[in-house]
Image (tube, rainbow, N blue to C red; front, side):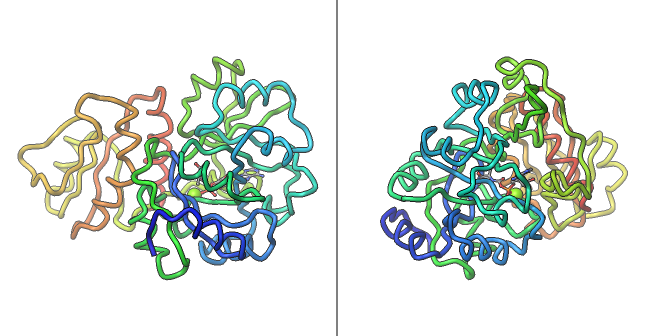
Length: 317
Ligand code: TXA
Ligand code: MG
């Protein structure tokens, strides 16, 4: 069931049930982070492998700090600059965080979502919320309550509807190697902005097996239809005998049916493109087409995180 009843959501979460919640990045599948049964239920509903740890969401910096055993100055600077917001920090976990949440890692992923409904809900609760993106494992993250309903609606009692997500990409995950920032996942805060605060950051290369970086699985975010990346004019020529879906950054292709194409931002605006990306992939994936043809954005700012998702979607097909 979809609704806007915060009290109801809070009651369900206190009872140990799961509730899908809006955040500024994507919708999350939330449960009491202090309840091992709720956390186990998250893995089960998502069909997520137990080696892939969860992000824990708190409503304030005070509450967040209580979940980390150590909050070094380099983390504090990033927290002050970007929280609440699409930043997740990897920090040594406090004892209150169970190994189930972190998949056995001594680090916990922590974030404060910047969505009024999520913050109101967290302020009603006595505990933080563990929440992965509210999609079946390996599929595209949901950016509306309806997206969640389509795939998980029958498995969870309530979906809190906070409207379409304003950022549209998952949070940027930052850890530390001594004091240097390490980007574990590109996301809603551009690497350039992280580096302005933290200095030069290391990027973690993706890996299909490293259990410390499972969000980096190469074939994440995959639509069901194969997705091909490249120069759109060439791809359209190459695949002209098939039924095509087109995902372009700025261009429109008047010779092709308009229903089968999505332009992420005709003005070339990265923020708009990020907001529309996952809904566009879902829209195209629901059409009777054989292949999705897509192009990369310029490799800067949010274009980097968008390209990361496009490459993973292409790797999955
Ligand atoms: O924007 C977001 O981050 C959304 C919203 C709902 O907050 N959440 C999200 O969660 O994207 P999820 O579970 O789909 O991706 C979280 C990723 C995991 O795949 C994992 O790679 C990484 O975060 N992660 C979580 N805890 C970690 C840990 N202790 N060490 C390394 N990576 C961790
Ligand atoms: Mg996810």
